[in-house]
Image (tube, rainbow, N blue to C red; front, side, top):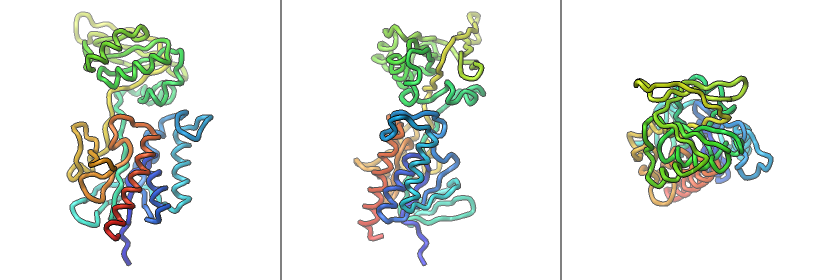
Length: 312
């Protein structure tokens, strides 16, 4: 009996679970390995208001659980565990999960990306209670309030500008004495009356009773001008980048200079035939639940076509 899996999906976020829905409905019996954080970054999001079909909003964990239950309804085999090793040099592909070795004719990589944090213990304390790594996800909750964005590149400037359309005041905390963003983005930030740029500043800690109330900063650290001060804020947004979870695949899969998977042609195909990618792991730009889900749909359709074309 051939136990080779037709479609193995690595990752259990909106991309992976949506891929499982479509693959199940196509009768290709997908197996999903959820990973160490089933649900991905949405599990740290308290309220999602911009996902279609939820006019009253929904918590991140509830949203991914709904997508997961829909995949199970159509027959997806969803398994707990973490992929420790892959071998994409031979067909069928080999995937190691703990002590188990799986064979697969096609693979959809949906391992997501991990937001970079400063490493402060307070970040986890106030996660979902003032701390966020996604302004477009959570900015709405800070309408007419005061927020801070950490970072000095284009992403940080974009988030500060976006938040300035909602919040009454935005601090942009920049570690260096200058912005790394493009000239156009710099001008937009510096000319925005709602944005105050704090150059040469680092965050020492966050504080607040039950929710975030402020941050302690140090300016000109290590110089004669060093000083510490507090700012009162309701929201603290990290914009220092994401790390795509691609270490397992770098030996075989083409990655860009940031480590994201390069997709070939206009599909979700990677450079290895039979291997596809969906969600934040292949998306350095949008990184939204809805775009991840859409890519999961595309990847499942691409995998189905690949299997049909190769009579598998």
